[in-house]
Length: 333
Image (cartoon, rainbow, N blue to C red; front, side, top):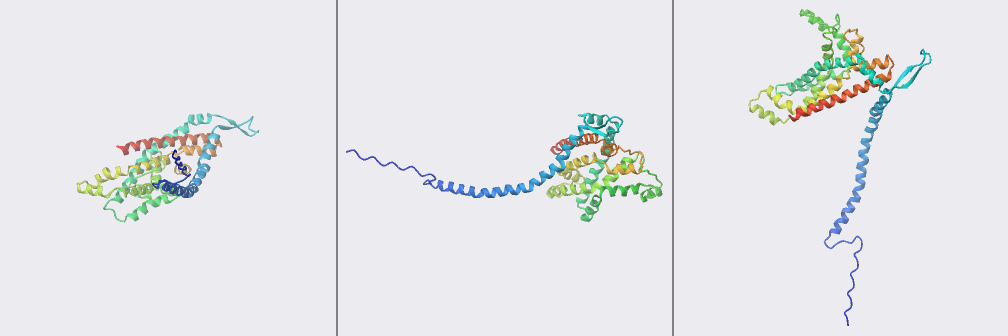
C-alpha cells in the first residue's frame, strides 16, 4: 500500500517573520519610517514657514516692480492734436531703449561714473583694507574704540552726511578752508578740477568704516599659526600683511569690490546736493540715477525713465559678473 502523501506546508502568512529575525527588523524599520513621517512633515512645514515670507516679499518688492518697469518701458505717452485732448499711452516697443542710448546726456552720465569709480574704488577698498590691517596688527591699541569711531560715519544717513560736507566745502563757512588758507594754500571743492575728489571724499568718509569692519571680521578667521610662522621666518609686518593676510581674505575683498561697484553706479544723493548747491561741474544729468530722476519727475516721461532704469540694472548685472570672474581668478591664483 502506498505511503500517504505528506501534507504540503501551508504558505507563509503575509507579513510573517523569517527565522533569522530579518522580518522583525523590517517591521521595526517600517514602523520607524511611519513614526518619522510626521516629524518630516513638521520639518517641512517649519521650513516653509520661514521661506515663504521671503518669496512673498521678494515677489512683491522686487519681481513685481521689475515686471512693471519692463511693461512701462514698452509704452510712451503722446499728446494728441495741440495738446488739449490730454495724453494717451501708445505702444512704443524698444523705442524708449533706443532713445536712452541715443541721448548724449545719458551716455555722458556713465562716463562720469566711470571716472568716479576710477578714483573711488581704489581709495575705498585700499583705505578700508589698510585700516583693517592696522587694527588687526599686534601693535594696535584700543581696537574697540577705533572700530566704533571708524564705523560711526556709516551710521549717519547719507543725506545728513552730504549736507554736513557741503557745509565744510562752502567758503566763508568751512573751518577746513580756513585752515588751508592759513597754511597759505587755496582750494575750491566745487570747481571742475576738484568735483570728483569732493564726491569721493564724501562717499569714502561714509562707507570706508563699513568695509573696514568686513575686512577686520575676515582677518579674525586667519589662522594665527600662519602669522606666528611668518614671524619666526623673519617676515616683517608689511610682508605678512600683503603675502599672508590679504590673500587669506580674498573672498571678503571681492565681495566688498562687488558691493562698491554696484553702489557706485547708483550714485545720487551726493551729486544731487552739489547740483542744488549751484556747482557748475554737476548738472542735472551728471549720474545715471539723476538722469532717470529728471526724466521721470521733471519731464514726466515714465516710459523712458523705466527703460533707462532697466539699462542701469543690466549694467549692474554685467559688472557683478565681471567682478566675480576676476575675483575668482585672483582667489585661484
